[in-house]
Amino acid sequence: MSILDKIKGLLKGHEDQAHKGIEKAGDVFDSKTGNKYQGQVDTVQKKLADQVGNRPPTDERR
Image 1 (cartoon, rainbow, N blue to C red):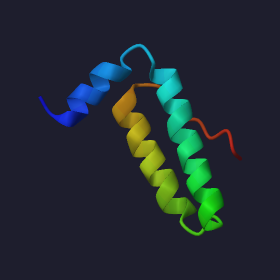
Image 2 (cartoon, rainbow, N blue to C red; image 1 turned 90 degrees about the vertical axis):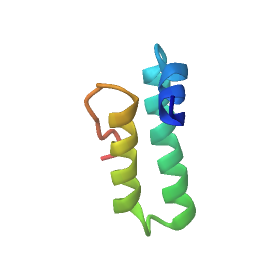
Image 3 (cartoon, one colour; image 1 turned 45 degrees about the vertical axis):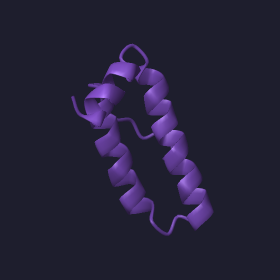
């Protein structure tokens, strides 16, 4: 069992909270770097959200 499988197991049933955490972490990183890496952060957020669950990505910041 890989570490990703273990994390997915822990998050099962809490996908909404995980998505909020991913968004918040990305927003904090963007604010600390002055949005210098915003494109890369958005890409990582999307890939993490895809790994966490099947919820369609939403862009609430824009």
